[in-house]
Length: 373
Image (cartoon, rainbow, N blue to C red):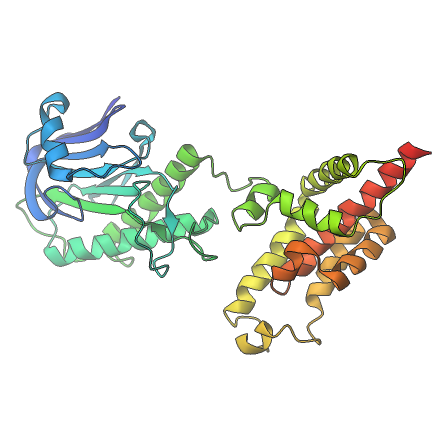
């Protein structure tokens, strides 16, 4: 698919690469592995590689130039994300035209503070082109603005790091590129207070968000089961905790009870009200570990003080909504014993997940005993 970005610049989105070709020489600043840094070229390439790619990037690119139909002085980014799912976003403000082309794969999503050395090639690659000349300071400013926009997009999708409990700020192998024509009066700034900064913010955020959703099916409204799994809380772990306190019935196999529990659990998790309460508890826990709960220092929150009862209130609300008073009874039983995963969860989350288990467990008993009469 070929698309015109400006009358002198087009982008070709194919199965093997995204290629931007310019009729004008471009000044380019990038973190690209091939011809990166500050350079000039008329061609920008975002090349598909294997997820476990470990060859020399420059050698690999040189071996592909002829088949791609690009010169060796092209600036080349690399990604294992499906390049055919690249997203283009652009606009114009105060006489400045801007386009962003983004590919995104988040198999190695991470927080900038994770301190990892994973070399996998999931990668969010951001290519930006303005139709006006830019000073070097403006180009650096543009890269800063694009990084802020990317982080905002990922936060809006609640993308989690694969290596920690943190929100992801990108992947461990992201790359960014900004380009502009050479010559003419230069734009001096690219921050949020400028027309260029506004264009970068709006279009990079939109393109990153849409690219992640398209590539990784990371819809904002994705199910609670998936949201919990992204935090390392699996339904199998909840079933294990439930079965630790299961009171067996002589005519019912434990394996059958487990299957019924899982069915009741998944049914409860499909309720948007349950999802809202559980995610509310998770958000409160995230605020607590950052010391953001009004009137409660982080150190106090970490000790799970007895006077903190908001977590219990949320738990009661979840259990009541799922299974009424019987659900509350079960919640208290699980909250006292804290079997399995519950013993490892922090304040708010242990009560919310305990209530989820308790409510589903109560429904399980109702269904099992009804069938055994």
